[in-house]
Image (cartoon, rainbow, N blue to C red; front, side, top):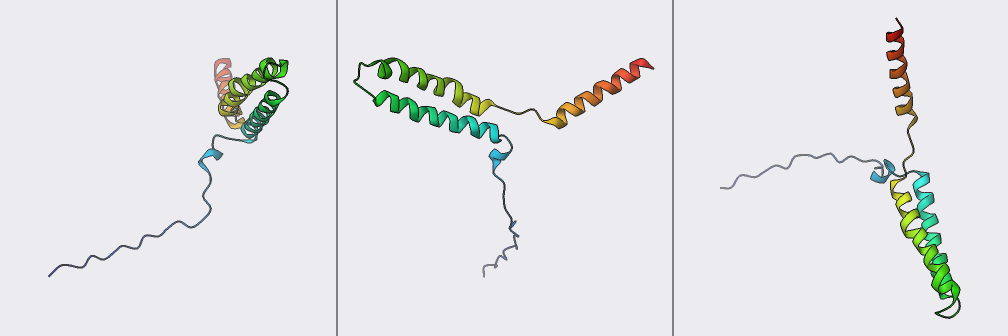
Length: 103
């Protein structure tokens, strides 16, 4: 006869889980992201103005789109605010080293 296997009680963690992006993304990152999206919308809108061979369609719109794609979106990804705790820890360790040298 087959043995019956008892399932173990697994307690699930109930609570609000934080987004993993909360560690890396802050208000500055979201600001750059939405600025980039706004510039994309403006760039494509300017591209639709006038004829296909007009100044806004051929010159102005690509400049706006290049700024959005090459400057603003990478800034949104790579922007990182320096943490105060790291700065104060580094300053405190430098001060302790200077105090030891002075004695």
